[in-house]
Image (cartoon, rainbow, N blue to C red):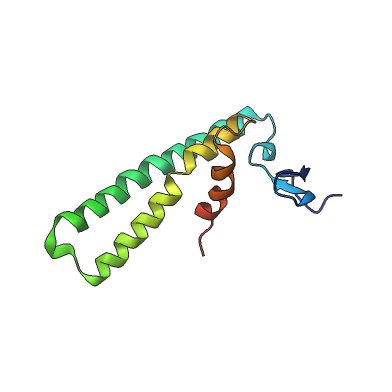
Length: 119
């Protein structure tokens, strides 16, 4: 029995020099289960659309109206930027739930986990 779920695959990292190690893959979690993937992609797209609309609206209101530029709203503006950073990565996650390939390159592959994890 493996200590990892099906999202971790054993591979050989020759490019990074790490040798044999486990790689996290979004695609393998559901395998070829199309119903679950369709639901998950739909949820990702709803989250993406709602997040972009809401956060752009908040940022626009704070930046447009001078009386909205308070210290508290500047903190809120900071949160909207962080949330937008998270939101713009959800289409990539939706894509890899449907397709097993990664067309976004090595840089985005390494950057994506940092934008998805919040402390």
